[in-house]
Amino acid sequence: MQRFKLDMHAGALLASLFATTWFLTVDATAAKMVGDAAATCSDLIRPADNAVRIDSATMIAPSQLAVAERAPTPAGRIAPPNPEFCKVLGQIAPSDPRAPPIKFQVNLPVEWNGRSLQYGGGGFNGVLITGLALPPAYPFGAPSPLARGFVTYGTDSGHETRPGEPPQLFALNDEAFENFAHRSYKRVRDAAVALMVRAYGKPPAKLYFMGSSEGGREALTMAQRYPDDFDGIFARVPVINWVGLQHAGTRSGLATMGEGWIRPAQVELVAKAVLAACDKEDGAEDQLVLNPVGCKAKFQPESLRCAAEQSGDQCLTEAQIAAIRTLHATYKFSFPLENGLDDYPGWGVSGENTPAFGPTGGWVAWWLGKAAPAQPPLPANGIAWIYGAGGIQYVFARDPKLDVTTYRPEDHKERLLQVSQLMDSTNPDLSRFAARGGKLVILENMADYAQSPYAGIRYFENVQRALGREKTAEFARLYTAPGVDHVGSGAPANVDMLTVLVDWVENGKAPGDLEVIEQKIEAPEFETTRALPLCQWPAWPHYKSGPTSSAASFTCAP
Image 1 (cartoon, rainbow, N blue to C red):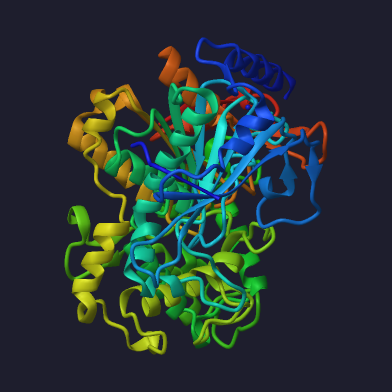
Image 2: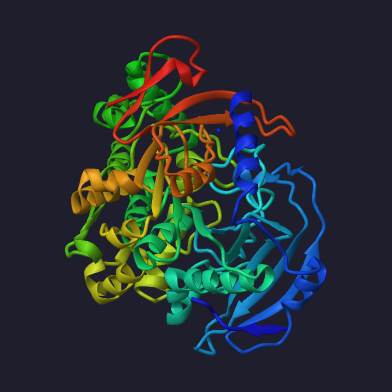
């Protein structure tokens, strides 16, 4: 074991993608491992100092593409082919002996393009992010970043969730929670850079970070807290106002207790009513709501109210209508949190009945579950209740036995402010990140019920207010993908944001409107079934003419 010191987009798309991949690997910054690759790899485990411990350093033979039958997300079914690389596993010891170590994995390709990519986590983390999977929103058939020559790496964020334990249990330890908030990603970044220096004789020329959900929050946190550390950052569906999200998710769960719970057949009723109200608004009837902002103002759940003496799955009760209104409404605090925010935006409309992919998809997966909320939360409950109620108990009240129905934020104001300072990546002042040439891309999926896309939209608009629209346009983009859920299901969602970032950071090619594709998870073709423009906010796709499965049939307009 070794300890070393920390230093601080069918076919045309794929053809273009592979051409770009070749471009990325033929580069002035490219390098090979110093000396014999196997010897260099094994030497990374040699004793040094006690800042970071290397548990293993192993050469891994090239692998083939593999597609699993089941996974929590569409991209999670795909294990992309990877080249020969050195797999390094290590950990960073805590200061508090009661806190867990920060575990990490770094993957060092024999043929290096001089770049690195850090992967973000998800949920409450507690699982080692290996850096071997597809990055967020990545096209299924594209070469992995590691196959493109990037050093890739990730971390468990400083704790390990064990079967049967609440995912928030770690938060009872201050150091573990601070590692989860931000410190672990920074420390692992520095450890990975030190390993690159030892393996290749030089640090990476450019560093990138890509994350989704909690990993999207981590991505924004890097831009805000550590603006000198990354050149290009991609944040998909970031859980940006974390404290607000946990409270709003809990409130929405409480609204479905008892008579407010909405049965799966009624979810279908609501989804069909939303499409009936809004599908044609973009000019084409394609089973997608392309203008979800306009649709939220137009759709009225009261239109589904049960008539006198009517009941069953073809209408909604007053309690169920009130629950939907709660989901759509802003959650308000009685005091301001970090960066002056005192609320959390309500959720939007569309995609209510997105089929669950593994545990994820639409209202049933995220909000309602297959059973009404319980205390303690049941596995059949919605994820927002499991996360939110557990967060209230373990993070905010720090009382695992708390009856969540009795919780009042005002009674725990000091703790909420502490957590907001640690967890809420809402600081709009990105001037240092912009000044050093950093580039940021945010992607919000507009049928997301894990977190409200309007939180990320508000953040981007706050950056524009703080720095000005022209200055913001020099380094940041916000895209919105209609009909797409939290994990990339329901509508075209895949786009190679890694190439977008590299082109912008290294070639000065600022991205305009892009294109997202929907693919079959059938290797090796991963056939594209439909595509849409990916519009810069606040534009959205308007139908012109032609097949609705083609992005060329639409145009981006406000």
